[in-house]
Structure formats: C-alpha cells, structure tokens
Image 1 (cartoon, one colour):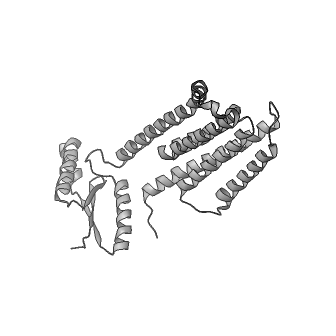
Image 2: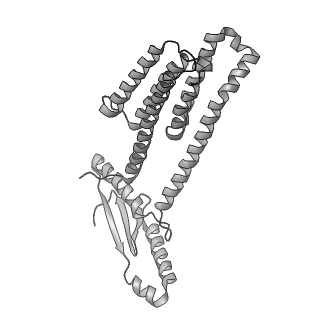
Image 3: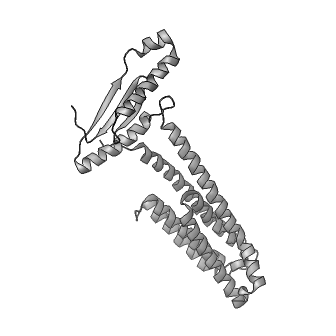
Amino acid sequence: MKDIDPADTSTSIELKGFNRTLAEIEWLLLVLILVYMVMPPEPIEHPLTIVASGVLFAAFVIAFRYVNLLTFPTRWKLSIETWAMLALTAVAVWYTGKVDSPLLNLFLLAVIFSALTLGKLITMLELALIASFYMLAAYSVDGAAIFGYQSFSYLMLRFAPFILVAYVTSLLAADLGFARSVAEQKAETDPLTGLPTIRAFNQAIARQERLSQSTASPFSVLMIDVDNLKEINDRHGHDVGNKTIRAIAEAISLGARASDLAARYGGDEFIVMLPKATEP
C-alpha cells in the first residue's frame, strides 16, 4: 500500500478547492456575457462571433475539466483555464465597445483568481497581456493619437484599477500564505520539547521511504519509551515531569546524527528516523 505524504494531501485539498472555485467563475463569466447580449444598451457588433466564442469556451471547459481529454499538472490546468477566460473576455470586449465596453471589468475575474492562487508571475503575465490588448483596442479606435500625453494619461488612469487590484490581491495572497506556513509550522512542532510532532515525522518518513526505494538504501526507526514518568509526576509534580521530558528530548537531539530526525511520538514516547542505518 502506497504511503501518502500528508503535505501532498494538504496541497491536493487546497488545489481541489481552487479548482471548484474556478469552475464557478468560468460559468459566471459566460453567463454575464450572455446576459449582456440579451439586454444590450446599444446594438452589438458581430454578436454571432461572441456567441461562437462562448460556445467554444463552454466546449473547452467541458472537455478540459469534466471529460479530461488533456491532462496537465493541476496548477498548469488552472493557468491554462485563466488564459482561456482572458481570450473569451477579449472577444466580448472587442465587439462591445472596446476600451469603452461595459464588459472590460470582466478581465478582473481572471486577474483576481490568478493573484490569489497562481502567484505573482502568472498574474503579471496576464496583466501585461490585458494591457497590450487594452492599448491595441484604443489604437484601433483613435490611432496614433493615443500616444499623446492627454490621451495616454487618460487611458492609464482608466487602466490603473486593474494594476491596483492585481497588486493588492497578490499582497493578500502572500499574507495568507505566510499565515498558513506559520500555522503549519506550529502544528508540526511539539511546544514542550521543540521537537517535530508525529505529523511532521510521518511526512519525513514517507519521503524517506520513497528515497530508500529509489536508491535501495536502508533506514531504521528507533522507538524510545521513558520509564517511570508517571511516578515522577506523582511524586514531584508535572513541572518536574515536563523538565524531565525536555531533558530527554535534548539528550536525544544531542546524540543524533545530523541526518537523523527525532520527534515526540506522544506522552513519554519518542521516535527517531535513522537514514542509511540498519538494525543493530
């Protein structure tokens, strides 16, 4: 039976949550575009082109997400889907007023999702693509006049919210990631001894098992059980018992090699992983 790394499981659960969220955002984007086409404030240029793009987008989502015709690592799948969202939004914006399109803000759906889940690099690339499209759309309407100081300043002022949203959302994602890493670190460190918890030890031993299988190198696991700790607690109090546990943990750490990993198994029990070591 294959061991599962708890860290990998945590990441998988997180990505599944992002995956579900993106699915809802994709269908929301499609619905908003179709609703606008049903009740446009003014005639739409080439409505069939937008409808065809929407149909292609829906087929892409169904094939890519539900039929699984193409398989990519999950983050790559999420990235590709956000680029598809940008493409659909670009078609809708182009034929509904270009830089004056009321659908222009739909680009923010992909930007916000990318900033929260895919990192700064993907977000900046998408923002650069949107900016390029925005300038092309403006150029198709006003020509070289957009490079004049007044016109260019006006365009940048209108585009500034996209930059601000991407920047602030990226900062928020970084803060959330830092808070999550601190929480995980605390969850993996025993507060009494400072040694890793059994949760962290299980992650390490799962990695060591895979490494040992691939390199055919042995490793051992040592269990240590402290005798008479209950008697110490009863006779001298729990403070003395805790000091005893800490002293034992320190002795184990000092006696371990740099490559060994000692952890508190629970109560008065400790466990040590010994890479490249056989049983005595």
